[in-house]
Image (tube, rainbow, N blue to C red):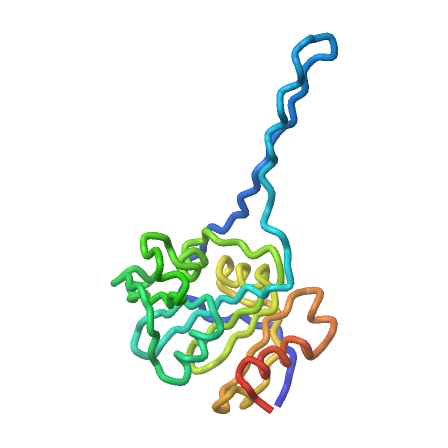
Length: 205
């Protein structure tokens, strides 16, 4: 059964203050009449290049009462299949309602454990995707699927999804899948591309 609906979803996450840090530099030149050569211009700080690489962010509200933030699809799928993560960092009682947070850490992030993992940067509001994004939230046995970081961030901030497209029983184990839409994408009806991304990630035929 498929339907488009306008609804509010439960949310237990505290709003994240997410901001994109943009640097700037000014180019200085010497006066035309000055005999000395113009000072060398400072190299401007630039925003990370937008590439075809897709940023992922997944949040799992587990039935064990823990929250699992994960920022790569491989670890996410492994956790869904085995219930385990190879590399993690834990914050006991640091969730919005006192939950324990268990962050999935990628193997290449283990070389310097003093640095926060990407999942931690996402959760703490210190990472801002500039290119393509795909994310999921698993809560109460349902998948919430997001095709843009703006929509995901809006959910975290406002504790709701205004427009959704729901498919009952289409998850990898028959779960309900709720696709997050916005005032633009809701006009397109069923989110075909987003649904295909979900099916491809979870290997659903």
